[in-house]
Image 1 (cartoon, one colour):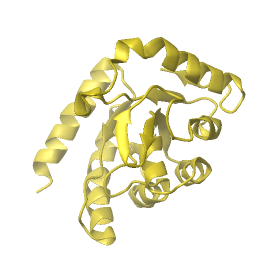
Image 2 (cartoon, one colour; image 1 turned 180 degrees about the vertical axis):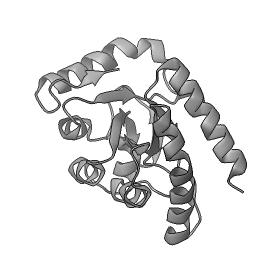
Image 3 (tube, rainbow, N blue to C red; image 1 turned 90 degrees about the vertical axis):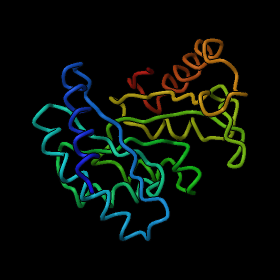
Image 4 (cartoon, one colour; image 1 turned 180 degrees about the horizontal axis):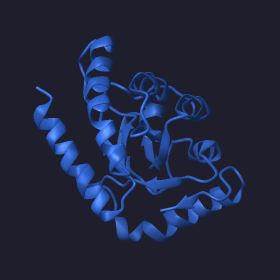
Length: 193
């Protein structure tokens, strides 16, 4: 059952290596499964693909999403995978929705973190993207908890929310907002992408 998913993942790893991209992002899936089954599903696939990724100089990053929304849940899987070819992508929205603080997420993901993905929304029930700093997410805390030498990636999901403002009009203000947070010293040296 994992064959097609692993073949696709291997193709993505080869593409990332060709592009000299350090990461391939994956979602855990497993929504609706009991926790042990969701863990086993994610561990099995990551453990099968991680050595291939590592040989190609790429890390497969498990995003905090779906069945594994918290840093603690993603780390539980990655601890079992135990390979350098696998790591974590910390999606600040999903850890927040799951009730995990930025400090808790960072502690849980410490050994595995590839990069941090930020965005902003009005509330846990209104997920239409907003400009950075205009919503409810604890972005200052998240940037302060982010690694000093890591990447911050702003994800803007207009594709799934057609009513969201167009991205081009948000870019300059979003970059300036992240740069201000980084300059405050919480994530000094972090690079805004």
